[in-house]
Amino acid sequence: MKRVKRLFAAALALVLLAGCGAQRTEPLPYPEPAASEPGKTIAYVPLDDRPDNVERVVYLAESLGYALAMPDRDLYRTALDGQPLNSNGTQHGDMGRLCQWVLEQEEAGCDRYILSLDQLHSGGLVASRSMTGDGLEIPGGGTASASRLLEELLAKLAEDENNVVWLLDSVMRLANVTVGYEGARLEHYNWLRAFGAQPRETLVEEDLTVENVLETYWRGPNGENPYDGAARQMGAVSADDYYQPSRFIGQFMESRERKLRLSDEVQRILAGPGYENFRLLIGIDDSSLEDCIQKNEIAFLHRGLRAEKGEDGRQIDWLLSGVDDLAFKAVARLYLDETGWTGGRACVQYFGGTEDRPACEYDFQPLTEIMAEHLAFFDLREADLADLQILVLTQPEDETEKADYRQQLIGALRDCEKARRPAVLIDASNGTYGTTVYEALTKQAELGRLLAYSGMLDMAIVTGTALSHGAARYAVLKNGGGTDAMDRAWARTLADSVLKDFCYKGVVRNDLLAYIRNELGGDPNNFRSPDLDREDLLRRLEAGMEQETAPVIRNLERSSFLSSYDGEAKERRWGGVALGNYRFPWDRAFEIGMDIRLGEFR
Image: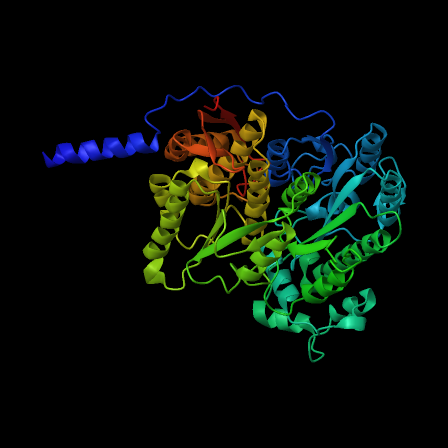
């Protein structure tokens, strides 16, 4: 009898979660026809060709009724060592042709732009870390000035007062190299990060000039040489002749100076007349809580941010933590501005007890400060009582209380589900709970009901990623909901984040890393150095994801979601979910791409 009762209880729970057993709708072919409104096109030059900068930005834009116009991938692609070069004969994007592409969009009548400056002046984020000098090589011979090209492009866009232009820039991370690019290896990255993290003399107020900041690159708080501190920290460096520390740091300094001067030039241009409809959004790449080499750069660029004149003094330009989420923030803020968003309230709850500290060693601020700055960017005011709930899991203050923190989070999420209250979930725990939190959420929560979720990859971008998607979706719901196409694009943003985080990052990637290192003797940071059987790796990826995603997909397919929240909560139900066309965009294990097919919503 007890066994019958247990079976009945399990079946009842399944029916309740499944919404009375509604039938799954068969996923439709991908991609689906674009359904944006006429004239709602954004010309977008991505930071590079990773999924966070391409397909996930497409999903977010489409979930807000926009269509993204993008140049051919070859023009903004980054190639690691040994991988096929772009048509311009380099490992980076083609800056000249990208500027030409932007001008073509202008001639065609586009009036919305989101442009990555690192791509336009360096050919991508990775190249911006190593490129030196202002000259750009032109295919077929000759050079052009990166700063001159950029100035001419911005001046042309400024001629049309109807244009709204978001410019995305970055503060270079502590280490300027990327593993697997231009011969860099992990030991090179570690050494340079140690050098960049050494304390520097702090500049304030009028002392914050480009020349003074450059001088502090080589000067600690008491005049000491940061090179010596890094050498003591790292010990002997095993590297080839090109990457002996002295020569490597020479390139480090030159590329860093180039990047700072270009950022300063952009701020100078925007301070002039005619650029009132331009917005500058600067992201801070991997950083440190210490008084590192970035601190004066950040303070200098912060002084150059524009604010509106008058009593309100509303911020026009922003400098926030995170780089790979810059496009998300720009798309979301563009939608909020165009729809007359006047802000809202959000209740933020933390679980884990360490929100007063950086989420990881690569953050330069406590999590609460990063959260507060991002809430301000989206005009969200923190309140004890609010419709919008933001639930944040932090690293555990007490390791023995992990299960309690996890259950408190799930309890709060279940309360939101019962009250039909919109919720955003941020996993800022940096993997300290292992897969237990993913497993508990899959079993006990309705994942498809979340407005947004983020926990994937670097901690610096989880806040911006989740709040971009969450604030934008919340505004759509408050505006009375969107179209079916907008709902379906939103569902892809959520499914992409949840499935990659829970299944790829949590399990499958770790299995691939072990297989590549231990059985193949290869490098998971670059499958072509040495050359690995990429078809074999794809088969392992597909098999691993098929197994690990099954319970999460079942959860999504059983979920309801909010389709409107204008006065009353209106709901729809998810359809079927299927994945395919797995790929390693950069021929490395760090990230994957995949197509997400959805069935009809009910």
